[in-house]
Image (cartoon, rainbow, N blue to C red; front, side, top):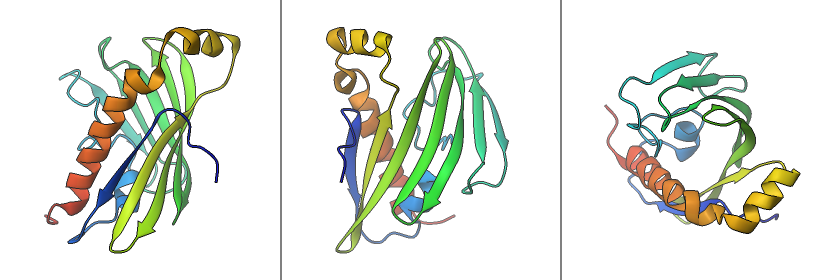
Length: 155
């Protein structure tokens, strides 16, 4: 098993579990669990494709805090969800996001990781910026929100 990289976090969900974290994680944008929701009350969102299926897309455009970009579901299987993430503002970057699911007794551990290309600029930034410190708390917040979404009663 490969290391998910420095930008990952873990969370376990416990029964009762009316919804699957696998189902919740395949919804790009997931406004209920995104740690960045609320950064811009006027955020514009667009969804295309069938939610939870390969090819479904979430695009957003907001203020400087929210930025702009797209998320495209690239892989959906019982053990893993893959998403291509492209930011267009406030800076351009691409990453591959993975939600990995590990069944443990009566719970599912969710590992959220993000991998970015290793170009010269990324290597320089890594010297000066600890990405886990920069966005690790956001990952923890998102996983906590995903857990709450999964464990809440269906409406």
